[in-house]
Image (tube, rainbow, N blue to C red; front, top):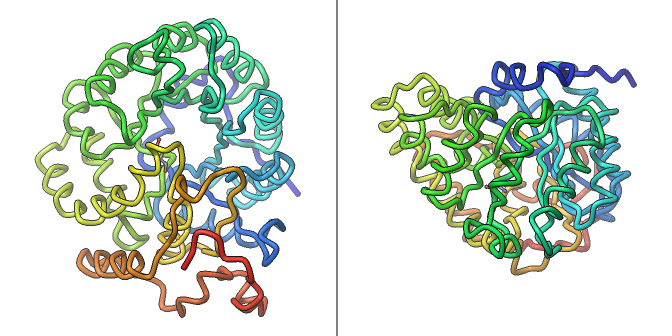
Length: 365
Ligand SMILES: N[C@@H](CC=O)C(=O)O
């Protein structure tokens, strides 16, 4: 397999990121066979192509708790399929340092452009220095772009009332490979503004909450929104989020605000699934996979290690109906495949695997 690297040298990473990180980045979620453990590499390839069809400049792989070797293999496949047409990122979401360091190294070797880093919600820091040293170890692990993650951590509130280690970020933001900052969907608006004011000159700000973009972008440059399932709000032929972010980046606020209310029904429904799970440290992974399948992705039941039913939730028939109704209202086209094909995913179905082979169906009804 030829790995084509889409990365600049560390010395010009900040400039390169500002030039290249424009528009939207989705999540690349693994698909598995009926054992819910064997990676479906064809599905990874299909999902990379689907991200391109959605107009994403980048796709970020989430391991869903599966082991690092599976994740690194998926990243190799994704980078190979990407072939320079789209950037590929990774996420240091394991609960301890060692697997995350292995992931950063593997991601760099595979040809990824960046990693989203965070201090694990499962760990409780005893000092700010501990948070700094943890993140520094990830940054030092490889020459790869770093996206810091502004997501509040209860353990950090002991040192910083915002829950985000702002002083630590201040020190790290000067490093040459630290290039961007992600504002989580549930971020407090005042904290979001503080982050833009404090880091916007050094880091490219990635804003997930669409409702904050017009407010922040009147004062700061906001040109990308990523590391979330944009398929919840758009389709390849109705690129509502991509258009919205382009208007925001171009400071065309009247047009952006009009478009915001057009896409709002889908964003509102998507948020109703996602926000309560984010607050529990999870994501509605099955819903996100379903959204992707509807709009051109592989689908296939998610398999999540280490997260509870509360943190992920269940994709219910009523949820699917609401999604279909909302997409119909907004003119977002959906797959014509039969619903049961979601369970296997497109690639496995094409290989003749039937839904009955998937005996275990977690987070799905
Ligand atoms: N984890 C993200 C959302 C991803 O789907 C966030 O922080 O908003």
